[in-house]
Structure formats: structure tokens, C-alpha cells
Length: 588
Image 1 (tube, one colour):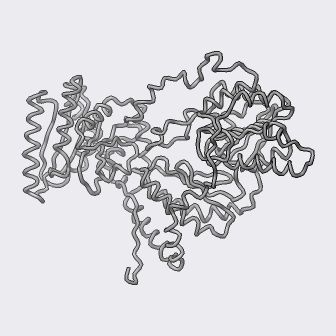
Image 2: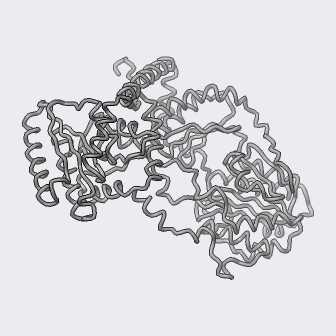
Image 3: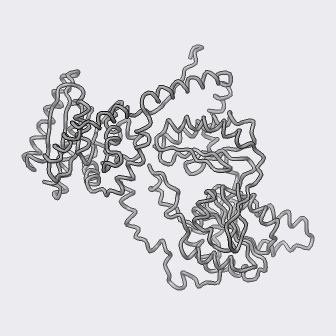
């Protein structure tokens, strides 16, 4: 700006855990916590500490609590709201108006539902001493904060840390207008203006199972425990140092930033919609006529069902309901692999150990992990042997450059983490705030492109992950390797996402090479015996599509010679699960 370089950096900060830890071990804190529990008996305790000003949303909190007791009368006598209002005397008119309204609502609550439904206290000053706060956190079941506008408030972080293992976890409720709502991935988020929704979320918090409480705590405890102000300062200084060192390349950085959003789509090719619905009877007939068959199937999303879209939000997931295909698919793969005329490969972007644990015990099944970075050839028995592909990149040098950059972005986003494999370096932002994660990913791609321009690598953005991979690494390498050694008159290749497009195109490339090298090859026969299939109708290089993962299982089951699932009326194994068990999570 006017000849001066201006750096804008964002880095999240948490509490000083060493200070909190020293206070927690004090006997005074534990004694006061036990006293509070004894005072309220068997009642569930909702705790809140707020500044007595309009923007803190205390009145909205009380209205939501009143709605809870009205709509859910089963909680009357079983829950108490412990509300501390701090009066700093910095905005006296606002504070007086807020306190008058709050006092009216408190009195209305007591008149309608009894004096024990709320324990309200006004405290002079802008802060409640830590020992009293920690005692309140230890004794309460739910922390609730509903500001309509707020700066940095670390009380939710303090509550999460206070309820760390082995203490039973609590539930954190924060306003979507607060800064912490984008940082704490395990918190329940509410719009304080939506009184009915907020009261419903209070009921959800009070009724939450211990398993879900533990799950939500685990999403935040690492960030809360490892991000003190000292680390924040080091992050800022590191960013400042980086921008000074990179000042010579700033023009190039700016030009690339203008194209950043386009770079997020660089793995997509110009492809056509696979508009032909697959005819399973044609596949079965071609399979029965063939003497040499090769079958390639993707793992996640093709033979393993993915989670519903809502399950990705604010949760670190593997992208699957289970790490194994349904029993019908395993049964079909086993039958197909037992036929000496077949060569069957499952090609995945997952790690060797995950794939092997899921389906590695199927005799005669070939596996490829890491999008083709390593291959395990079909074998009938014995321990699997994995072969690494030579991808022509000094991977140690790539890691030395990429990891510090990715670590910098990991520090900026709670819930993000680094994924390492033998042939890729990934930054996952599944569990981050969606908009914040996408924004960081866009800038990370630009920085990695500049830093790694001398290496033969490419950047892939897919399913909430930014990955650095060798240019030669793709699933098409597996296709070429297998078809080179196993020419076939029947090829079936199925996949569900962008990473599988290389499989489809490689099938056609190998066919073209085979056709040009043999004048006796019958083109019509080749075409009729080749089926590239996308799961879901989408832009794809595949010639056909099926609607869902269940149709993939149905197809494999049919061509293997087993009875048709649909014809026998047999339900898929995932259909046997009660879908209603997933529903509450979508609204949690």
C-alpha cells in the first residue's frame, strides 16, 4: 500500500492451558464444584457467564430457556439455568436496559415454572475469578453462550478444556454470530433470534448420549489444548518472515492468486456426460461369452457406500459408512476371483493398510492403493506383497518443502490435519468451517505451486483435501500395467469420482494401441466387450452410468453367477440398517 507491503494474517488462539491446569488442581475448585452439584441435586445444569449488555444476547437465551420449559415440560424440575451476569459499568445505559429486561424475564420464569428453574446472579466487574468459573464448568452439563455480536470470547474453550478426559464431557452451545462458532467443530450452533430452534437445541444438548459428547469433545480438545497466545505470536511472526522472504516473487504470487479459484478445478478435464444407462443384461451376456476378462472397480463410493452429505459437515470422516463393502459385494468378488478366466482389481486412493484390512483376505483379488502408487498382485494365499511404482520424483525433497507450508495452514484451521502416504502429501479440511476451509485451500494451492514448481508434481483438490502427488501418479497407471500383462476380450471398469476418470480414459487408450498394433483385431467385438461405468449420472469419460452403489453390487452379484438380488427380493446389507439412526445427526 503506497509502497509499503501490508500483511493480513489470520491465526486462531485458545486459552493458556498451563494457567488453567494449575487452577484445576486446586482443592478449592473441586470443593466448590461438588458444592454446586449438591446444591442442584439431580438436576441437569446449564451454565452461562455473560456481560450484561444487549449484544451478549442474554435476553434471547432466557427466552429460549422459557420456550424449552414450555415445549418440553418433562424438563421442569430436572434442569436449572445458572446464569452469571457481569456488570462492568462501561456502558451504563445499555447495561441498565439489559438488566431491567433480564430481571423481568427471570421473574417470569420463576413465576411460571418455580423458583428453582433458574439461579441468577449479577456480579460487579468484567470478569469472574477463574477458580469460580472452573468450578461452575466442572459441575455443569451444558455451556451456553448466545451473543448476537461478539469479539474474542475464550470461555467456550475454557469449558471444553475443563471437561477433558477423564472428566465426563459436557456440551458446548455457541451462537453462530460468535467468533468461536467457526473454530469449535464439536459445538452446537444456534441462531439466538430463532427462539424455537434454540430451545430445540437445548433439549438436544440435555438429551445427548455420552458417546456423542465424547465425539464432539475429541473434535476440539487438540486445538483448545495446543493453541495458546505464545503459539499465536509465533504463527504471526512466521507469516511475517515468510512474506518478507517471498517479496521478490510477490508479482508472480499476485498473478497466480487471481487464478486461484480456477486452479481448484485443474484436475477436471473436458469430458462429456455419460448419458447411457448401463444395461446389466448386456454386461452379463458379454461376460459369459468372453474367455479372458479383466474387472477394475474403485473402492470408496463404488463398492463401499459413502456417508450422506450431511455427515461431512464439521466431522472428520473417511467418507464411508463402514470400511468394508457389503457382504453381497464381498461374496461376488470372491466368486469372480475364483474363476481362472478373470483378473479382478480394486483400485483405491486409500492407504495400503485400510484396503488390505477391508478386502485383502479375498483370494485372487488384486489391490492398488494410493491412487496407483502401490500395487498388490492377485495371490491365492499368504501375506500380501506390495510393489511401489517409480514415479520419478525425489519425494523426500518434496516433503521437506511442502510440509512446513501445509503445517502453517493446519495451525490456522481447527479440524484440519496432514495426511501422509508413500506417494502423496495431503491437507484435509473436512472438519473445518466450510467457507474458511475452502478459502485457505485456495491460497494453499497457490503457495504450493510456487514452492514446488521445480518438481514433477501436480496438485489435486478433491473431497475436502488438497493433495500433492507426482504427475505420473494416477489410477490409469494401474489399468495400463494390468492390461499390458493381461489382454482381455471383456473389460469392466467402474468408478465414482474425478480420480477414476483416468481409469476410463486409460482403458480406451490401451484399446486404441491394441487395435493399431493388430490388423486382425475386430473393432466391433472390442467395443461390445468394454464397459466403462460411472456411479451416478455426471460429467465423465465413462460410456455408461449406474444410479447408485447398490447397482454396482447388483451387477457384480449377477455376473458372478449368483442369483440376482433384485429377482430374489433380497435386501442389500446397508438397507437392513435403520436409516432413522442417522437422522438425528444431520440436525445435531
